Amino acid sequence: MKKVLVIGYVWPEPNSSAAGTHMMSLLTAFKAQDWQVEFATPAQRTEHMVNLDEYGISSQSIALNCDSFDEYVKAYNPDIVMFDRFMMEEQFGWRVDKHCPNALKILDTEDLQCLRNARHEAHKGEREFTTSDLHSDIAKREIAAILRCDLSLIISSFEMGLLHEVFNVDTDLLHHLPFMVDLHALPKTIKPFEQRQHFMTIGNFRHAPNWDAVLYLQKIWPLIRKQLPQAELHIYGSYPPPKATALNNPKTGFLIKGWADDAYEVMQSARICLAPLRFGAGIKGKLLEAMIMQTPSVTTPIGSEGMHNHLPWPGAITQNAEEFANAAVSIYTNQAEFIAAQKAGNELLHTLYDKAQLSDNLIEKIQLVSQNLSAHRMKNFTGQMLKHHTMRSTQYMSQWIAEKNKKTVRND
Image 1 (cartoon, rainbow, N blue to C red):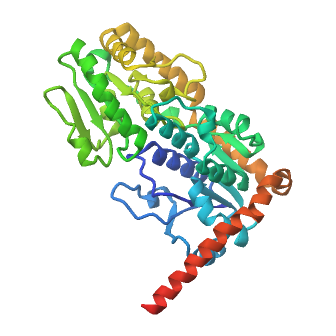
Image 2 (tube, helix red, strand yellow):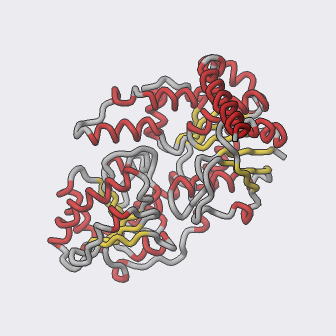
Image 3 (cartoon, rainbow, N blue to C red):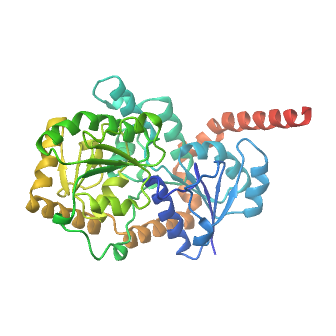
């Protein structure tokens, strides 16, 4: 039985974010192999975190910059260690290398932080994003983490191309893994066109692209409301801040609903999902949930990026506020367009997001790299060099903080 250690950035919250859902898909895929799986994180526990015990997954709280992790990882002695985002690899990767050098190291990027950050900076500067924006300190850290790992999971086909073509990362170090959907668990019955009403959007308010989309909807919604004066926009999401709830306006139908107990239910009750994303990376969980509940979506090129491989989009992809509003109204009022969008979404789910196929491909790739780990690492000289030099600074800083903390405890 293989032993897997997953070092998480946060505790999984599948009802709060797409990242939480994706993490649970990975954990359950490992468990399906009869592997022993443990999830460890330095994050604080939260009210919305999933109960991992129910899935047969053990959990452990760990500390940053603390030698206690060394004893912990030596005792657990994993065959596979997966880091949730590059920051966790920076923190714990050198300790894994030191105490479990034969463990396969996997980096789950979730999405490319450097891409999201570069687009955010361009958006704030009110200018077009260019590839030169990518050459940031975050990119250097993130690409270095990818090179230090044996395998990195990349959620978007666009990001796969970017890593290979812009950053010259060997494709042997990458594995394309979009969100995994259990096609056998798709709902058997879905509310039809005539039983649905209003528009909706959903997303964790702490995620900057989601909050920006809410602000953009402030400009788009009057254009829709002008054509559909009785329509409402229901905005759901976890952790709504006061600045978000202050936007609630029943007179205009712009309603901040906050936490949704059942994201799928509110998705299928709406006629259209709106996702006017102006920056970001990866692929978008809300748009996949819309496909699952057969709710057409209107989005932007950023929203649809890496999600449909040139197959028809289940709704509309638009470039500006006017196009967005007109497309939303057209699908909302035209049952034929609505049904055509549903069919396109169903085709995408079966073509690109089949959990059974994606999971098999992932396990096959892990097994292949594990069986040829020495040769695999020999091909990645840059990664070995980064481990030797770059990680020394991270290691020594961490050790300095650990010693400083010990002295503070003794002085107290």
